[in-house]
Image (spheres, rainbow, N blue to C red):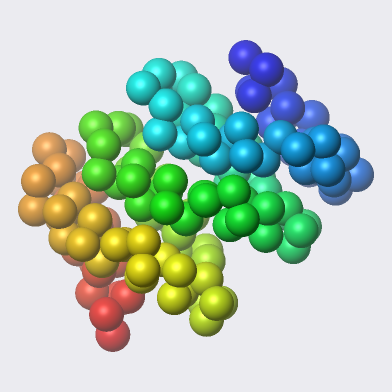
Length: 136
């Protein structure tokens, strides 16, 4: 609930985002990306996405807190948030610095695994399309 409240505070308000980020909340968001609780995962995905879409310092804090690895790990766990994790990683791909970290984290292998084992056909298709886009 606290994480969800922080997301509401940050939503569309750069000053509030800066305050939440400078208070050191980002590592807690990132850690909960792979929480066993689906509710915590969902809240963590929401606020982490706000950080990725917000100020450059917020994005950097996500990366520094291990967000790339956590998002790749989320792809390999049972979750309803695979499409969100893929979208968030793809937001970072254009930056060469982050692209390298994403590939080192095993993004391609995770996409292949998800594309062959996901129960949701739409997720399978998204994973394979993303894999093809990343490899081209």
